[in-house]
Image 1: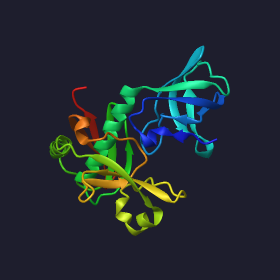
Image 2: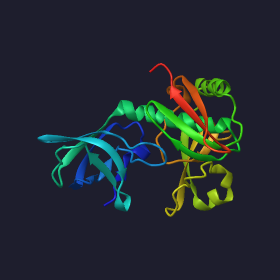
Image 3: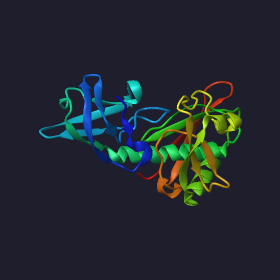
Image 4: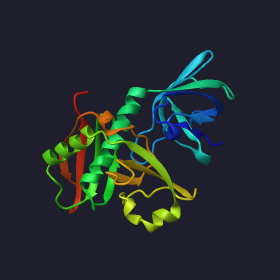
Length: 240
């Protein structure tokens, strides 16, 4: 029972009509959804499912079997009836912060070329990336350069390539701990900047803003050593 991933076609869609394919304490499966399921360091979306006579707060969205999305009910929440027509509504403010943060982390990657990414986590308040790097740049330099890239208002786009094209360009993959999903024959690339000379280009299945200016001001708040060559860089949105 696959769920049509509307978030992939339009990251700005904040609600949609859908039909319930399955409902239980392990989660609710819809035939289509704007909810992003937790993956690749990006949290799953939260929000509501509404139907005639009831609503269910969604605490999280995760991947289910067979390309489905499980909408996890909050504790004690009522479940929609099987086959019911519902409206799935995102906690948009939270999702949009995740989009801004995710795009920021791609910009951060562009400032530390050549270093593999060993881990990462996106949050609404603070995000981080871990780099295989003995000596990272100073946080003040990173903050200045990130905000310059954001202010430049670079467009953010996507394109799809065949798996064979990725095999021919292994340098596109920055993450050492998580590899792009394979088996479907195609890989989604997120591009920041013009096609001819991108600021950043790498495989990614997450949600992003349309242009860097939409991110707003950011700050690199902390650098941490997490091993002999593992350096953790924390980033936060400023003023919100």
